[in-house]
Length: 119
Image (cartoon, rainbow, N blue to C red; front, side, top):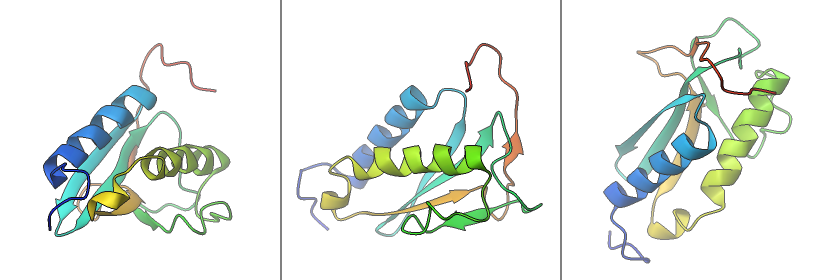
């Protein structure tokens, strides 16, 4: 599929990774491609984001404000991630975005990083 803004999917993924690292330096994300789908998974954060003892969770960002599976911190964090992704022209590029916490083969982890200023 020829992108509308002349960015390849690889370039779109690189831009997403760069913005995630800049905006959320205290978290670790996995950004991968599956056909026309770009997967963005939160892999590590300084606080727990899931309420139940699940190791991964796919997020439907239309229902994120209700987010009963996420802690308050997790809901705010993931709403900011969604806003970052939707505030770009990535979707005009013929790419769909899927957002989640952890992956089926690598669970989400709470990792303390020094000097990160988490509120």
